[in-house]
Every structure is written in structure tokens, then in C-alpha cells.
Amino acid sequence: MQQVLSNILLKFLRSKKAKILTELTDSQWLSGSEIKEIQNRKFIGLMKHCQKNIPFYKGIDIFHRVNNLDSISSLPVLTKELIKNNREEIKSINHPKDRFIPNSTRKFLI
Image 1 (tube, rainbow, N blue to C red):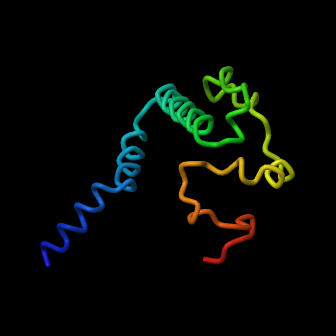
Image 2: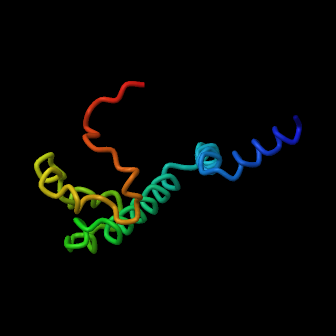
């Protein structure tokens, strides 16, 4: 029984959820400027991911002007029409195709 619990605990501690929980616990004591710095770093990481892995964003030259959250307003707004017309180009190329959920704008029942 103890071995089973140890294995479950080890699995959790190695999981992404544990990393996020640790990050959230640690960040509660940071100053506003430190939190803003983390947000900017994560935002830039997301922008780099989009430009590298989402065909729709590869053709947009606006990313060189987006260097923090304050410049987010310079990004194009994704409208429903834009998404419908560019459905395949908006999908990330490094995401497994079988994990996409068609018609995901519907409300899901839990």
C-alpha cells in the first residue's frame, strides 16, 4: 500500500500540475513588478510559439513589434469569420490532430 501511495505521489510531483501549483504558490508573495515580468516573459514565449507553430501567424510581420503585454493591442483580432475562413491555418502544427475537438464553440456539459 505504501509503495502504491509513493508511486502516486512521485507521479504527481513529476507532473505539469505540480509544477503549476508550485509556481502559483511561490508567486503569491511576489511584487507587482515581478508578476508583470513573469507575465511578459510568458506572453513573449506564447508569441514565439504562435509564430513558429501556427501557419496563420507565420505570415504576420507584427510580431517584431510585440515585445510585452502592453503591446498586445497591436495584434490582429480573431473574429469568428476569420477563424471560419482560416480553420486549418489556425491549428498548431505541433499539436496531435486527433486531439482537436470539432465544433468546440458549443457549450460542453460536465
